[in-house]
Image (cartoon, rainbow, N blue to C red; front, side, top):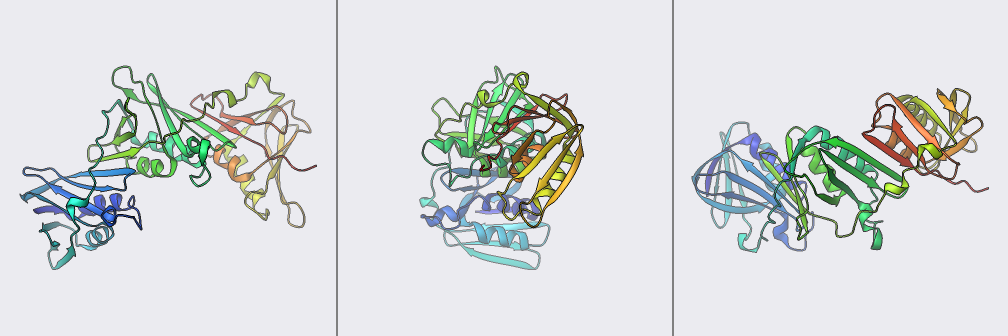
Amino acid sequence: MKIRIDQKELADAARHAFRRLPTNPLNPVLAGLLIEAPEGGPVALSGFDLETATRATLDADVLEAGNTLASGRLLADVTAALPAGPVDVVADERELTLTAPGTAFTLPTMDRHDYPALPTPPGAAGVIDGGVFAAAVVHAAQAAMPEKEAIGNMEGFSGVHVAADGDSLIVSATDRYRIVRHTVPWTPDGDGGGELLLPAAGFAVTAKQMAGSTVRIAFTSPSGGVAALATDTLTVTSRTIGAAFPDISSYFPDPAKSVGWARLDAAELLEAVKRAALVNEKEEQPIALDFGRDQVTVRGGVEGSKGASRVDAETADLEDFSINYRPGFLGSLLAPIDGLAQMWFTVPSKPALIAPVDDDTYRAVCMPVRLPK
């Protein structure tokens, strides 16, 4: 194999693919990156950990067709260290040589025949702006349950769920204490139906990688197993979570059944929550929201160190109402709201609904902390 390729393009592709590879795989070839250079191009660089396959399509001059497999860590480090400009990449059965003006690296190759076949992505169901999609997925991923905790029948809680609803996508996640739901526009092909459920952490990484492009979404095929996201130069095919995503619709409180509500600036409340949490001894220690006429006081700490901030608020039927939240949970739900937020409450032991004022594209639910009596 012999190709000539731009250093930056090769380094970016190697970096993106390497970050998804396992550090200590049972099969050493899974720590490798595969370079394929068919006659006439295009060149592809791929990584696969048996769960997620990353495949970058690269512009290159194919001088001699072939393929090779080399250490992903070495390839990412070496390509990043090469000087800018054209790089000659030459490989045989034993070694891979990368040459740029004044610089050359030689890496051992790995056995290509032991490398598993890459999964075939399903057909795309529609397209979406990558920045809009990344913002929704990355935020939702924060509210998913950590994989190490999502065992047994809770496996579905560890993912971000995306479902098509006409010309909108519904992006959701929950860890049972928080629920987030974003509604974002997209352009479907045909009826635009479909859904996928991908592990939250990896899904967020993929979405951020594609934030600057138009993204094609391939939902889980009827036979199940994998879903894919793709741009013109990058395709990521991932095994979906086998468990079903929980039906969260019934857990959104009905505003009509609330006993009171508050309307206030989301950024101001978020800053008050962060200030109150500074005096907490533990991350999970709750802060309190005490409502009065036209204001809410956010308090942190219990004994010794204490802190409190007041935030102006329009309230209805919440005088002398108090509720406790984990500051990180409440803060994460307020973060996407630009401007006024509204919160609807029933009793201090039941979840509150949080939403932007005059915007139905985001809804969140936060479970309170029940303090011992």
